[in-house]
Length: 554
Image 1 (cartoon, rainbow, N blue to C red):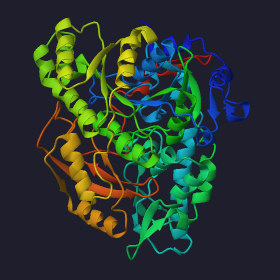
Image 2: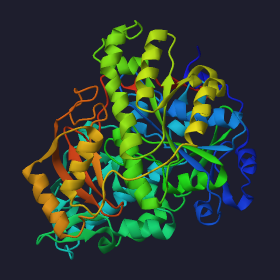
Image 3: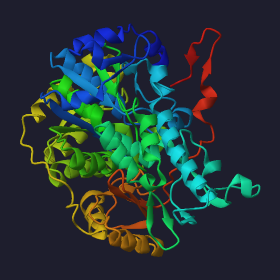
Image 4: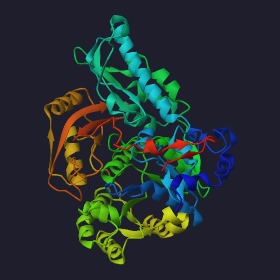
């Protein structure tokens, strides 16, 4: 079998103008970025009245065995198009952190990919660089305000805004800057986040217009004064210039799948440390260009899907019509305690122990959120008939159809069963609701998520978190939804608790407000907003020859 990048490099891509024309886009609404990439005017979302059906793809809690969520999303969209259903694919932009860290690429896999794969996984159209620049402009202006006499009375010890860069670099988590004398700034403790964890990324993904973007940026709480008052980006005077850096990036990016079907890729916050969804502008544009839209949420359904539903849908009016939960027999066996070296061996006992993870996610989607669910079971040659039957029987008892998927090897042909299952799910009753009322106090919202979605018993708070919740409530932020930063590997805040742990205590160690994005961030466990590289980074395998041909990118 060829590698992902070899398959992508052999793709017969159509000129992006041809893809755009097939969607009925006028020339003035398409901004080409070379032959195979383009941006489309974000204002389209305010013009057209058409509204397609929205299909959300999520997954079980991820494991080293892999689940194939993006691959499934691509294959499903291709399969639906092959069935004659006008379908748009809507994905997140990859971050360079995972590309060079652990994943080596994030554009699907096998014969279910978006192309040009190398461009998408690297600089693409520069959106993430624009987000980083806007973030760091605000950081520079905060420190400059202090340097120039500190007219806003900012306490340098209470600057909450961090610089960012789109790379895993643990060395930058905690730093001291402003050294070297008065002319070089005010010495203080500082640090970097990865760009996809920045509030600017969240704002970018939730904004629906340039004016909305500017208003949200102005609301960013970036510091506090000596007497405890919040300082915003608007008060710093940064909002207009930040918007100027982001105005072109706000237009969603149009590319294509290996089978020449249209795909929009735009925005990419991580679901374990941010809200994990592509942009509202991209999703709404896709819904107006296609009869069906396949979109994805980051990591497991307790993270990406929860935030898609409780944050993105709450603020945008979007409503999914069906949800696909991606799983593999191999991953479920890992959740059941199987040895990762023995996943190709039939082990129904481990599978049975691991199934509660999938069943919890099904229950969340169908019972907590009231949405019809389909399980996409990515098939491996090592999966046995007994293992597949066990998964199907368990899911049927929870009211979820299981569809075998083989899109990695077969493209759209391998996704027909899944596509038909999704089309049936779209006809089922939909009683969509949120997991909690945003008007509830912050602690009640976190308790609701812990008990109804994660399966925990209660929430504990550090003294710092307790104080900050009280302070944010006093400042008027108590009515915002909550965005929980939590490990993706477990339904709990402990990555070692696999399967479906119950009755655990979720510990919130820190709380902050993302006022521009419109949510409260609660950090749990050991979650980091600036990841590090692994022992053997994917970057070590990536190379380029004298002709500019890249290798090793997954």
